[in-house]
Image (cartoon, rainbow, N blue to C red):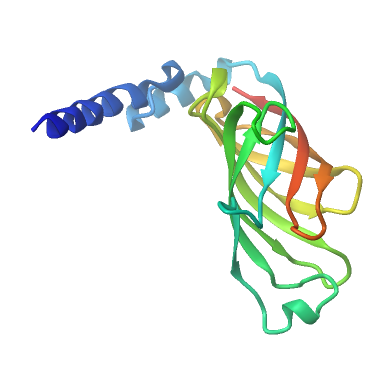
Length: 191
């Protein structure tokens, strides 16, 4: 009975607290009211810096292969390889650094010519001042280039109607394990 009461209390607390994330009313009426005020709103510019940990081979990987073509491993670019990810985003490059969110989505090798990944993911912020907000990325990531620019195509919470650029730079990669740490600099406009 004690466990049931605790679970009921947690469920009630979550349903009351979550809709008020960042003071934004996320109900349909609240969103409509927010859009009505939009013509008078001024765009805000936010800069973010964090590290993305793509862990492919470990006891608890954060990126898992979900598909491949019949000839993926005969291709010099691994064309057709697709992975689903739930990668930690941290303040510093060390794996035990403070986690501020997760990169959740899919990436796949989409080029016959070079190793270029199609990236479709949400940056889901779970800690700090952007807790509960997201940014969405849809772009091309040529992982052997020093800097890779990918567009921010949307967002939620604090980042409603976001647009911007995410610049990725490999911080560390292990070619044997395929595990990588990638530094991200994000500049985003939102309302």
